[in-house]
Image (cartoon, helix red, strand yellow):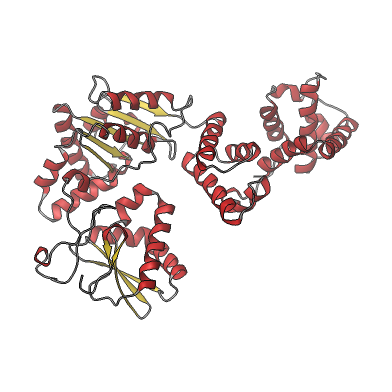
Length: 478
């Protein structure tokens, strides 16, 4: 191949660039780091199509296939690209993002052959990527093989959505399940379930599935308008057996794209094809979508994925830790489950960082290393801890009633947690002993002092007890 170097995922150095193994190696590292940071789906949507160009002095050129994609990458990723390049290849200080027709889009990781020179009459030497034989795969984002039903941890907050997803995977277009609308907060598992459905359906080999984000749907639609190929775009979309659109809320305010999606939706449902959609809110709450579209979205099965519970977060962490083969102490998993409560993706990311750190430095995972490695994620907020908060957290930890903190009960199962709460109140607040005593059922300050001293003694005698108290302290401080 004249003047070019083949790199991962059918990306090539510009035909006029000099042969530079170090530059190629740095490019592979930059791509790997981007993929790990943004995830497979986002990477496949926006960054996989970047083509490495020439390096002139300290400025590196990167090519993209359309102006729209160039502008998006420039606004969302340019600074990160610069930072990664400066780390991996310090000679690169500036990046220029340019549009070059014929660069790759959604190229396969396996079949990577350049077209012949006749495929591009304007640049006979410039290698481009062979179009995929399956139109639908060019239209959509590849499914992530990690996101299966087997790897999805089921708990009370997501069991209904999981059951609905299973039903659609087994019997697509079932009455009452078309469309399937999944909604919930960020990082709770909507995308995981959609990929799981797609993976299950494609096992049979005779079902065509197209998965894409709402952003990508809009991008494809705009690209079709610009290239005057809207009819081809419509025919391709409406020929699939299952269409999955993620993060539909992105279409709010984009009337023309909504219009196109509405007609695609109707055409597929009328033809008995399955539609699966996700969003951050239920159809009725997606203000900004056309009424007719919201009505159609709500006419099938609507399933909510609720915020995770502590028990579900622990289950997710245990499953991920087991799959990694790394020993992660239960206290560390509890600490993470208490600290990161709203986003499963972030929770898993925190665990992955801990496991990677343990693997690279050869040290076991402990609470101390957890706080050190994840300090940017778990750094303490500037706030005052209240006695009420301490009482609530301690009561939850030992599974006793909050009212027991101020009751007269003297059973050890109640008295010991109460003493720990007093100890932590003394450690973490500026309240005086009499003030603390009043918060615990008007107890005398000598009772508080006895509790503080007793807990300190037990911590010296019992490492397990000390670890429990330390865990509570760290959670409250964070």
